[in-house]
Image (cartoon, rainbow, N blue to C red; front, side, top):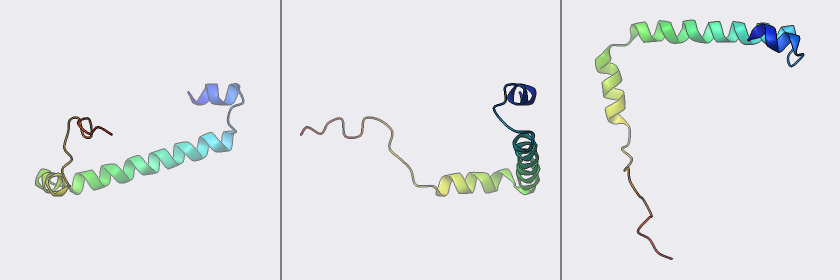
Length: 63
């Protein structure tokens, strides 16, 4: 995809290089954090999130 962005003139080389470096940095950061987490930590965070009701909210309201 990088080559098509450059050949078509949609982005400059600096745009593509910056995006690549940011993407690699973000990926390494997420991987490093994920290696430090235990599954129990993830479950605890998910369980602490407010629950949203699924279904037809407001569908029974008539106005």
